[in-house]
Image (cartoon, rainbow, N blue to C red; front, side):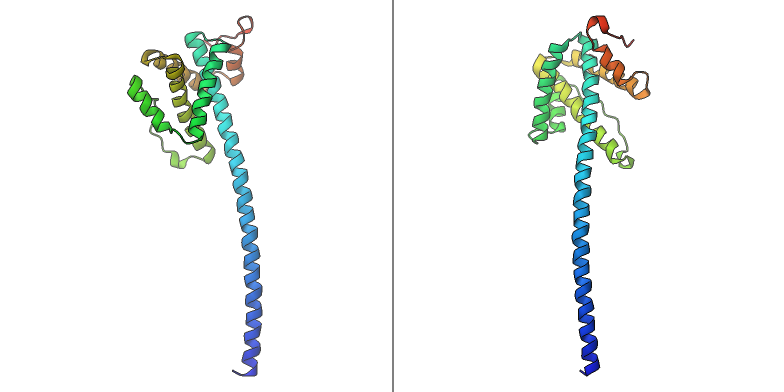
Length: 192
């Protein structure tokens, strides 16, 4: 190898080291950006899930209030039982399919699910849909487990919750109206 070839080889080696270091630095920067985006996404997902849980809890509260005339104490018992079931689900001791199987075996009832094409939905919409499925099953199981309600009562309250959710979705009623309907007797607003 001649002198010129050796000099060219050294030059390429220096450029290669620089480009390798540059690639390494870019990769680290990219990983940090991906981690940061992932953290932001996790926070956003949890916010969407919490909002969906709050709305569904309000719908279920109004449903049991209208159907059974429950007050604050009975709804608090229901919330306590539901929170235990949610905790079991979050710790992966039970799945939604397990709860639906229990409901099917015990009271011959399954939460209604439409066949939807969720592939075209956005991430937030998918999270809300999953929350509806999870919390509906937990709601029915809590009523069965804590209060011993069977098919007829569960069906009545589930239909009431579905009707309230449809009113909320179409805009006939707002979340504020639902909250007002749960107020003490003298301050209550009737929904229909």
